[in-house]
Image (cartoon, rainbow, N blue to C red; front, side):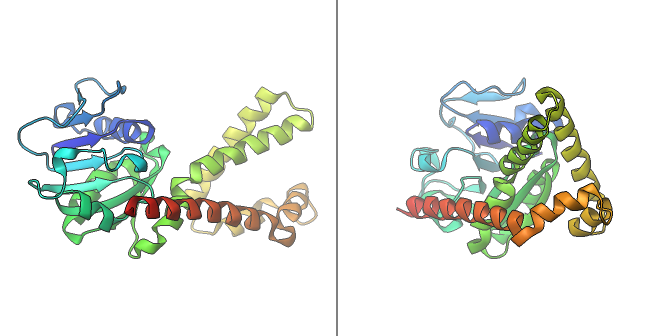
Length: 261
């Protein structure tokens, strides 16, 4: 079990921490560095700044990207290096991290919020020397995927990093649509949540593509087919989602440019 500093324990950092502890990482191995008052599992030390003494085996940066220049001043370039630095800062490239921090290996990661229950997605990119340790750290969080071309990381961040937010909007849209047609709003929301949950579980375990699964639900001339005809007309749904991902990708690129200075 590695010793770990988690720099920032907000929504995402806290979600990762809770899953690591639930998966068996001893709380005594973890130090959270956060000037606020984050809620952490019992036994995890919280400090406003990095403690003196030996460095941990892994440092995870989980602050807001715009705070990169204020994060962990004791690990600035020229200091004794940490064996592995993992960053979840959206838009901040490996080269930018390597310029600012002293580390033997740097790995960029983009988790999404379901890591809190071990059902997340984590995209990874970085130094080969940190690959095994990064995989061991991320394995309890869910699916991890290495992205060879860092230029595609902004797209991955838009798809899987921001994807839960877009999915929640779809659940809300299903519920609001049902309510607009007469269902009680609370009942429509329960039905929408359970429908998306069950459908996602089936899709995750299926060998067929989502297109094939959708066609299996849609009998010729039936009600599902009528609804799909609306979504499929002029590729309306694909066009909308693509525009959504494009907007998120552009913002990721803007944040990367700002981090580079």
